[in-house]
Image (cartoon, rainbow, N blue to C red; front, top):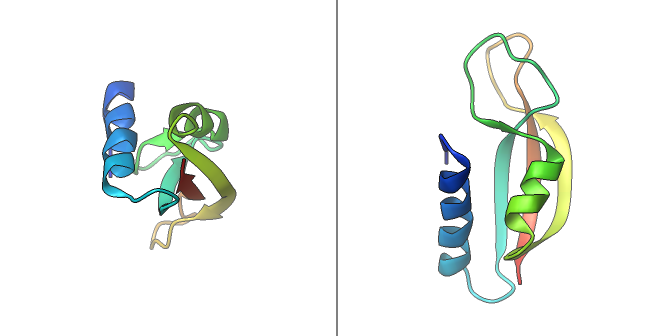
Length: 86
């Protein structure tokens, strides 16, 4: 999923919550804002931004910094985020 505005990001979270059963798990790879990227890539968020958007509807089980599998050098950073629906 990609988004162009914070409203779209909130919409994505609401849709995911509507699709999952109670205690359902959502795994998401999210662009990591801890880097300045020279090439195009997915939208980037900080861990704080992710928490602020998802916490009302999901509990973050884990959030881990990693890299997207890519032929770009260096590959873009990401967050691997596991969330459980409240």
